[in-house]
Length: 179
Image (cartoon, rainbow, N blue to C red; front, side):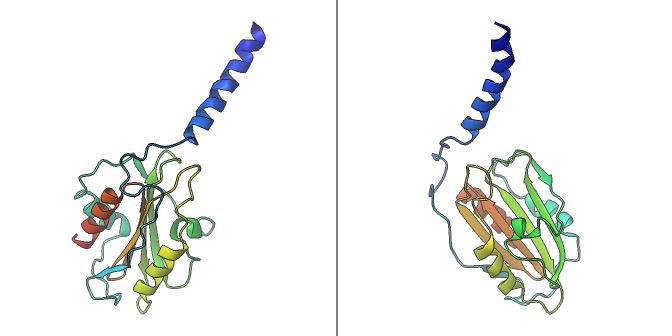
């Protein structure tokens, strides 16, 4: 009997781990198992990187996210460094990057992430955004994939959204563009 009580916590942990990697409910997904590949959206300057907002990326994020009405997972700001930059942005960090910001769920198995970059004056923000979109891994989470991958450029700021809910992802992109 004592051996069962010692093994039971291990079995429970294994069961929880396997259930996290099991089949996910795709009833809420507009296109389960697909990746949106619409073009890069550029606003406020038609592709130049004229600074349109002097606030920090966190302040810009806080501003446009208040307009998002869709239900969101519990999000936290994640520190960005040289070791995880490519993971979050799909590109190697270059001299063209001025600052970076990432917000993602507290739980790691939710396919959702918001990554923002501010590029330096003279950098081609639209080209960097296109590289981000093609370079980011929508399967970067364990056992789940983002079906929505989209970028938007507003002046010198690039927004990358990965989500498993196309409507919510579109609402976030639109909130950013209209902020």
